[in-house]
Image (cartoon, rainbow, N blue to C red; front, side, top):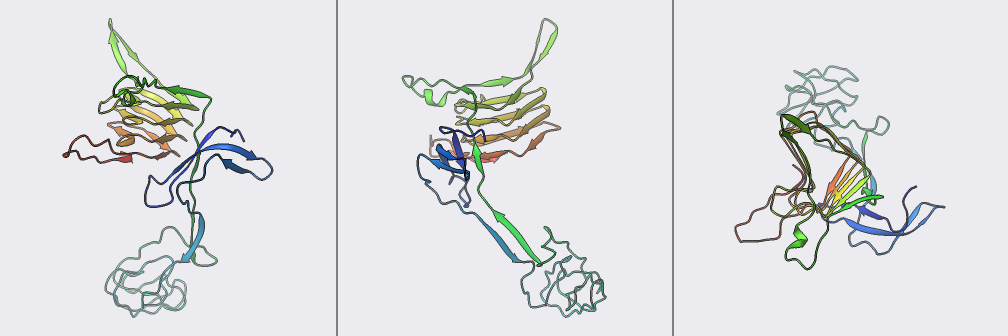
Length: 282
């Protein structure tokens, strides 16, 4: 592994509160068993488990076939085996159409509605659904760091970070178009509070990429993409911004894949009429 003591990792929330994540500094790594020791304990509980639960609860109508679902209130249908015919009626949607079922032995409810496929499919051996619940562990340290300078002697300087703009412009009859390709880069303390100058802005360009990178501790959006084409954002972490981590508008052929965005928060309250709506993706 390329994880080292002193590196920073994030363990994401497993609760309904998206801000219940923990940030750790690695103290040591035991290579014999893969255990990581951190300098401080966790502030929040992080749940991890495998869960198995029945594919269909008992709804008073008997077992419903795995290929169908039943939302009816009353059922009296009978199935005669796989693919068998059943006669019955139901109030609501049952598996089958006019009594024709994809039934399992033991009598599936059939009725007047078309069958509704189940997704995801249950385990073929047990008939149960399997859900694995785990926190994501994110390694956010990088060897290339771009950090906005914060001058503590200047008033409100803590809200005035770096601004990276990729755009196009005309000069003396020539059109110049920028491109951005970030790979394994960490950008910190970007964005300028309550302005359109976000940490990274991709505007009116094409063929840019952000891969395996980190944008965190932004004073506005982490990433804003507008009126652009063929932009790839993949395997990256967007962490702790104001209002939204990633915002995309008026753009085409976007690839947004295998990213984690967390920790978006409201702006500091400035007046009683302020209303903020925030999301990790917008």
